[in-house]
Length: 213
Image (cartoon, rainbow, N blue to C red; front, side, top):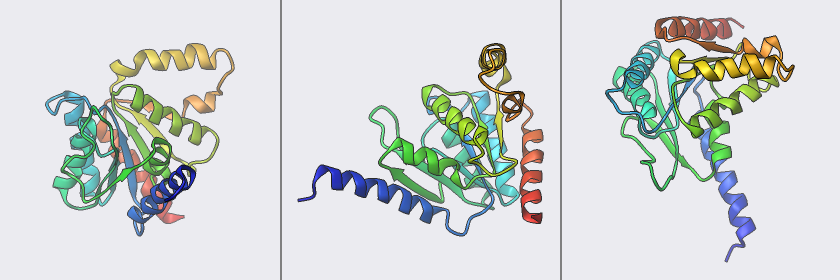
């Protein structure tokens, strides 16, 4: 019988090994974050679905947390475009459906920390739609990784839903920046816009630039 410590280490290894296998041979990936509680008819779910559809039509793989709400909407858009992979990296939660039905590649993780890492490890950009604690956790994780140069040069984080994020953006500027907790450069990592056509255009340019390097 394996000890609890051995089981723990094996589960961590499985998360990273299997996660790496999911992305084998894939290079043009974009991550979409957002609430699992958003209904399919919500305006942000519709925007996520449209953006993912358009990205997939251009050969860009869409990565989500694999669950319901915004994640399902994004996976659905990518799945129905049928030009690139719709990837869901889920985790079991007792109060939410862990997997949606619109993925071409999927995996259920044992731990949040390994899942968060794999959600952005192979991506060129990240688009964050309205969400709760989980979405905020994911967003600040990738903000920290980008700030500390752990993400590829030029990695961009987009916030969709300006009205939703308005007070958070004010806090970042009026509290964090005003008190020298972050730099001006750090603020510029984030781009808040409801213009998904602009986001699509900029992401395609990021990928095009990377391919020339």
